[in-house]
Image (cartoon, rainbow, N blue to C red; front, side):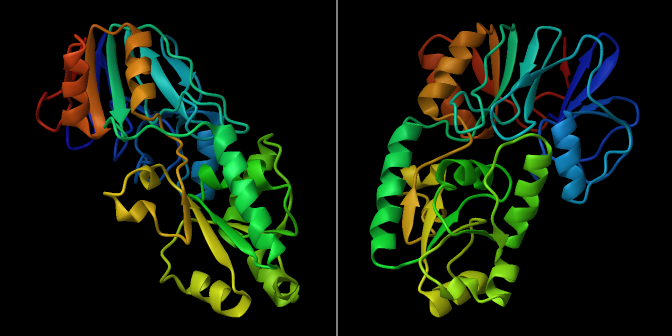
Length: 321
């Protein structure tokens, strides 16, 4: 682990995994287009999916030397968001952010066999066990129905990229359907890339035309604080109620997972049990944990006989194979 992210030296290739800055002398793999995984500068060749390239461009980062395939490198669907991939090379599998659960248009990741596994463990504590997607749908549909019966508009909140599109597909049958402008832009790109999502009107246009005065309605918006001016306006003007979606809602210890009037446990990552199953399925002889509860999850894996350790900066100058 270096200051620029994970560096693997394999067969005279320098492979950077989700680097902060691309390196001119190596191969730079970008797993997906969430901002914490996008590099801030161009430099060398960037290996990423077509979808990740398109979404990154929408988010303000243009990959100048983008390739979608390289010999001896396999991009593996990671099931996290549209275009998210893991990377399999030289018996090493890097998961990026990963989810093995089917959710709407997203299919759960299928785990390849490998000798070395580098895995995220965002929810790598036993307390994080998530409900099934059909249970979530039933719970939220009943809640929306109850609020609609009282004439109350509903704002469904999830990350602008990823969860907002899943929410749109799962609950877009409610209408009238509106979107925060930023979600509408992201949804439009998903539609262009072949994802079937119901159309709706952006919040600026809807408000300008007085459509929000005709209640109830459903709006999909990014996850935001109750102090956000947009939410305060929606509540004060229209009496809207918020439903937030986050994996962190599973635990009472993390208040940022419960920033809405109603908080629903739903994540684009594996839960604890899914992480353990994923590691076992890989058959890896060596596991390195990154991003999340790295020490705790590595310790849990060692309890069941798996050789695991956290990959932290300066723990290895680079990772060679």
